[in-house]
Length: 502
Length: 135
Image (cartoon, rainbow over all chains, first blue to last red; front, side, top):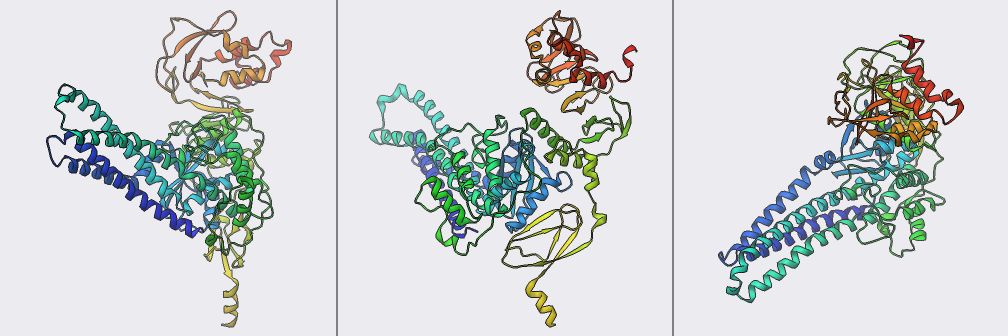
């Protein structure tokens, strides 16, 4: 964990809230004096008061409602273990590896463009969103890299700062807009009596408030867009360490960057949240860029030779970007042990998908999330039934066989299995063959594993073969296999000794 | 999505990497915009899309299953014999048999063995199975 970065993020958030508050109050006072200073001696205070009120409302909104608002404007649908076990389990594995205090809520965004983002005020209350397009084009290793990157943002407390900054940007834009409107209105009103000017004071205030109103949105934007660049590198470093496989994220970033699909739901306000900027990105590293250049991020990940730890990432970062400034403070690197790069996952990446194919797979994933029923006929035709479909049976239009419709929701339904077929790299995997591999909770047994504290460990569930990477900081005694529900018990090495003595 | 013709719920069919929306009652087919071009490109008949021309047909106006706005009537095929419904933003609606005719028109004259095209054969299999054509 980057403790000093976390502390710095918290400090910066408080500072940002205070600075923005001060700035808004001053701006409000200037507007008040300008608009009604001639008539009411306390107009400045009134303006400041109104601005403070707006600021407080915006702050409360950013702390309590921003998640749901930002999620809903992004078209996100929540998924759980039943609706999308492949994704949910992957997130869970990374949560265990990163030893987060709580499981984030997992969402799939109805969009064919590959991308991902995270949201949340604290690691205890966070959200991870991936688009259907990302699920369609990414293999398991790549998806794991992206999920770990987003968890990295959650772990480093980047999201609180970004959420607050997003809301503050909104409030500043609103206030300066109000001011510019009232300015237009009042100049119209004042033109006829401009000769009866109230003196130099008014002119000074006018100029100051005008400058403020013009500068506010620009300043807010620069501040807001400059926040997430170093964070992206840091989250990449976290991802490399959690997955122990930097190539996964590198290849995912390449796919996201190379996609020609445009993200429909992205707004400029939500842009900094995504793993790769979904709005138009210039090739150059400008002041307004929300993300560092993609090519540099991929290059750093690919230059990580010899290990997947923070030290290896730092070395690669300095080598690629030629920056002297340390990415990770020395205090946080103390005790950062050596992390070996693991081998690529057996289920390789989904390579060579055409645009049409990945689009269709994204569509299947969205259908599974939206509770479509999937029926595969023996003749090879796959029938996808929307939840509104009323009948209990469906007749295959091709061979006229009649199938009963199994509604998604129950465990091991057609929808879930078909979604897994969509996830698997090979299009040849039909739901039937997946069904054979699937063993339900009925087969659960108790598996015992020795825990080696302070070391990375790879174990597999004996019931279903699902692999788990156990992090050195894994603290629990048990693990419920997310694939089949089997219980895996851990006996720590020291405790085993203790038992022998007793 | 609801069928523009009979308001039944459309179901999605996938076979050999082709996906269509299909009405089980009236056997009409909905293709999202661009999908027809993709299908035709696979068969080498993409020139057909260029022959579409709008007409003021007497046939009843139908509504787009996605945006519920009235769709435009268009004529397709070399001699303009097929009357289709098009939503400019979302896609095309084919009544029963129209998709097959359209594809046949799109692929004729391109290759001599055009009839052997996998797509046309497939659609034959899906929509006119087991000698039902005579019915």
